[in-house]
Structure formats: structure tokens, C-alpha cells
Image (cartoon, rainbow over all chains, first blue to last red; front, side, top):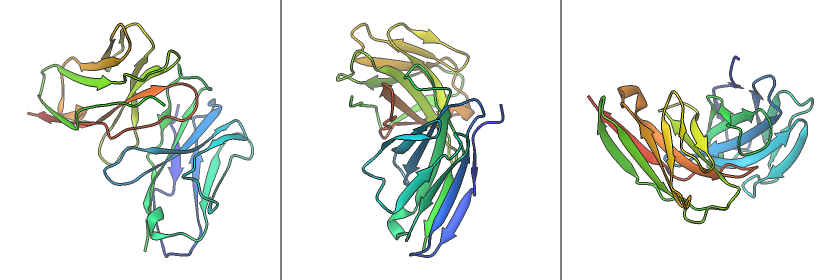
Length: 115
Length: 108
């Protein structure tokens, strides 16, 4: 068990640029989640996948955001035309399967700064 | 979605027990009660979860009220490494909704 990994760990970009983050979940985990966390707040749910299917998206996920998990393994989160309000920590988590009896394992996050 | 109420902050002395309370009076019958903690500059870390019965693991104990409207996370002997923000989350099947949590400070 190597844990959930995220890349890059830090990203600085200029407003209007596109950015893409990658998440590699624990290998046997079917569920993958994306969260966003701003300073001083708890993480906010963005979206989740069951294998390759994206099953739920938060209203926070505007049309500038898109997430994929093409083969049911790693996932990418892309933000197009970044805005300063997108500056946050983007967290990925995975769990063995669906159901509240299973815990989520979080990665270290990708910190995005939009200048 | 169930709403939670936790103290903004708590302090403890090292090697003493800590009881972190959480009220979740609107919890549904199928919600599990999950606790996570987040150390500075890290992603959240799973601590413990339960449905109705009290639960113990190597990190902590979880005491769940009989009516399930509240729960208490118990750290039996706080260490400096336990200083973190602790989140109590009623969770059913999909999105996990974090509140502001309780910031625990452990004094040597």
C-alpha cells in the first residue's frame, strides 16, 4: 500500500491559464474523490468516480472544471481559464468501494496559486 | 445532509486523555459517523468510524450516544503529534461533507 499520490504538489499559474492535476489512488480502490480546500476551511466535495464513471458533481464544479478517470485507475482534474478564486488546495481521496462503512484515504494535495 | 456542531478549538496537556465532542442531531439512520483529522500541510487522515456501537482502534475510541445525536472522539493519551484539526462527519454513501472541525492544541 503506497497510499494516494498527487502531482504536482504545488502549481503557480497566471490567471487565464489552464492547469491539470493528477491523482493516483490506492491500487485496489474503486472509488476516487476530489475535494477543494481553502485556507481555514474544511475540504469541500467536488466530484467522485466509481471506477471510470463519474457519478456525482458538486455545484462547486463549474463548467471550467473537468475531471476524468479514463481507465478506472488514475484521475485528472483540469481547470480551464483559471481565476484567482481557484487558488486552493486540491485533494484527492480513494476508498475500497462505495458505502459509508469504508473510510477514505487522502493524498497530500496539490496547492494551486493563481496570480 | 446532517449538520454538525463542534467546538472551534480545544486544548490538552500531553499524555492526558482528550474528549472531542460532536453534535449531529439531524443525523439519518443510515449515516455512519466518521472522524478524520488533518495535520498542518497534510491531507485529512482517517481516524475512526461507527454506526451505533462504540468503536475502538489503535488511534482512538469513538463513543456514540444511544440516540446517535452526538458522539465523542477519545484520544486516550494525547501526544504532540495529535495536534490537528479534527472533523466529525455523518456520512452515508457519496460526498463527505466536512465542517470547520475542532483545532486541538496539545501542550507539553
